[in-house]
Amino acid sequence: MRLILMGPPGAGKGTQARFIAERFGVPAISTGDIFRANVSNGTPLGVEAKRYMDAGEYVPDSVTNEMVRNRIAEADAEPGFLLDGYPRTLAQVQELDAMIADTGHCLDVVAVLTADQDVLVGRLLQRAVIEGRADDTEDVIRRRQEVYAEQTAPLIDVYRDRGLLVEVDGLGEVGEVTERIFAALADVDQS
Ligand code: ADP
Image (cartoon, rainbow, N blue to C red; front, side, top):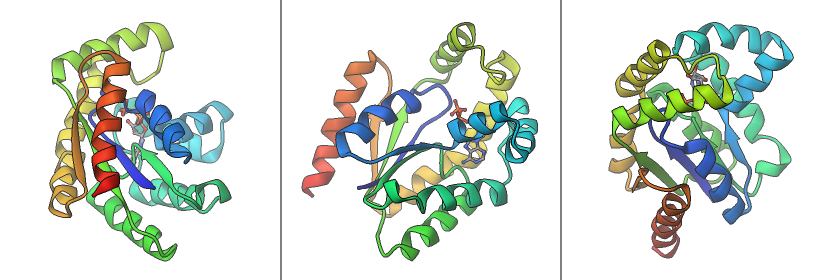
C-alpha cells in the first residue's frame, strides 16, 4: 500500500497516520517529524528548515523533495508507506509521481481529513500548551492555515480527478475518526 494522508494543520494527521500505518504494516513517514528531528539535532537540514517552520511557511521544495526521496529509498519503505505532510505543493506531487514511478509501483489512495478551521485553531492552541511546539502560536497557526489553503488544498482536486481521493470527517473522538478512515480505506481495498 502506498498512501497519502492529507488535511489542514491540526486535523490530526500525525495521530491517525500511526494507526493507519500499523494496520497496513507500512512505515508512517511524516515530513514535519523528520524536520523537527533535524531541528533538535541541529543538523544543517534542521537549521535551514527551522527558519521556514517558525514562520509557518513551507520549506523549499528542493529541500523537502530530496529528503523524501532518500527516506522512501530505505528498506522499510520497499513494501509501501504512508506519507503524512507530503506532498503539499503541486511541484511535490510531480516529484512524488516520479519517485514512485522509479520504483515501478503506483499510488493507491489519498485520504483527506476534513475539519472546520476554527475548531482546528482551538485544537492547535491546546496542543501548544501540551507540547510547546515553536510553530503553535496563534499568528503562526493562522499563517499555516493560509499557506495550506493556497498551496495544498488545490492538491485535493488533482487527486480527486485521478480517482484516488477518499474524504473523511476529521471531527470527533480519535477512535471514531480512525474507524471512519479504516472503513473508507476498506472500500478502496476492495475496489
Ligand atoms: P502541521 O500539519 O500541523 O502544520 P507538520 O508537522 O506536518 O505540521 O509540519 C510542520 C512544518 O514543517 C510545516 O509548517 C512546514 O514548515 C514544514 N513542512 C512539513 N512538511 C512539508 C512539506 N511537504 N513541504 C514543505 N514544508 C513542509
